[in-house]
Image (cartoon, rainbow, N blue to C red; front, side):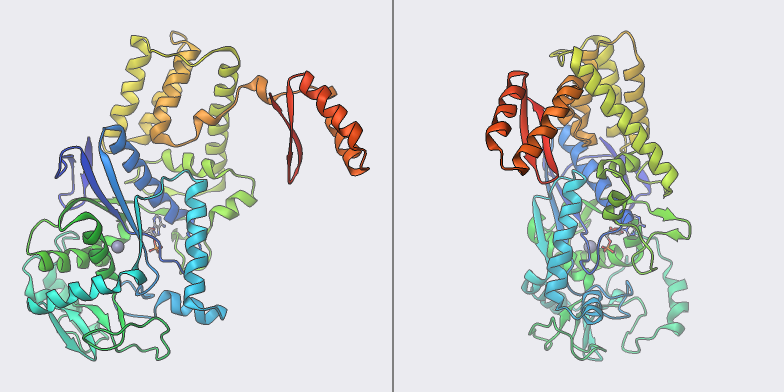
Length: 466
Ligand code: AMP
Ligand code: ZN
């Protein structure tokens, strides 16, 4: 397995700390609004990475946090807590906001067939872990208090900014525009806020430094180390996390543990763009998964669309492009359905089919080259020298990574029934409406004698093969 490491700016062989196991931390959603499809692109990338590692035989301990406090409207220490702001705007409590959008997030993940992380941890349930970490940083001389807030002093370490390759001399120049006069260095960041510009902050906790709330960065350091240990293999997020959030996570984590490197591989997903640039929640219009569903797309069309681009390349959104992903996925489903009606899934693969399957996995193991892997699948489907049964087996095998629910596709025959059966089904519905249950039962028996089972759903009755 090879994967691009943002720290070295190169594709590296993946070597885990402990044989056979991978510790992987992914920065989770800030639950003040729905996730937009750009955020979801990042979670799909992380899911594909996890699935590829699992295919390689690793046991992946995938940890993701839920940011329900501390993420200000600016990625630095400026602005207001995003949840508090949303609460004020909607008249809801911050807890209601967090619960509502956390549920909505997992509903989206489920619909996209994203595997649930092994550990999901909420920031508000780990305040003590954060306080303990800040205490150690204080004891080691990495902090100072100013304006009532506790800051991390970046001048107490010698490699601040190494992930983003920041030029600290240039940063000093920027000092003039710094708004927070309490900071010794403009890049110092808050570990614990007691001095909030917004007096009626709802989420506050007692601490050795006064009643307040944690900074956003300390959350991820405290929770990742709690569940994965002081050093772990992979840390993921979107590329916007590199210059501030991940940079600050590294600074405080390495200062805390006294060990380097804290994380071996930094993996970042590129942006989804819309016409005006990066899709973002703050810039007004953004698309949710729900809005795509309302327009007639299946969530898996979005998953397929994301797979057509490499995770390290920007992906431009357009409805035309999504339509073509929908059509490609539709063709794939149709093909499987038609093959299933005449073939059984092969138990073994011939040399020729195996070469294709291996090629697919080799692309994925080489820094997740999903566009090439998909192209391999299409060339397999067109290959007359490979039987339908073998094609089905390969499709089922590779779906362990693609996650397109290919093995749930039914055979064509099983889905189709004739006009007569349709008429009978209509008649049964009418009979039930008229409370003529005798006739309704008779029709059910006729249908079952023809090999169909009647299923009543909220949107009406359906037939399935017995
Ligand atoms: P947030 O909920 O704002 O903390 O963001 C969740 C994740 O989505 C983070 O890993 C971000 O880096 C990522 N992200 C934000 N905007 C985009 C975008 N336009 N395209 C892809 N990923 C994004
Ligand atoms: Zn994070």
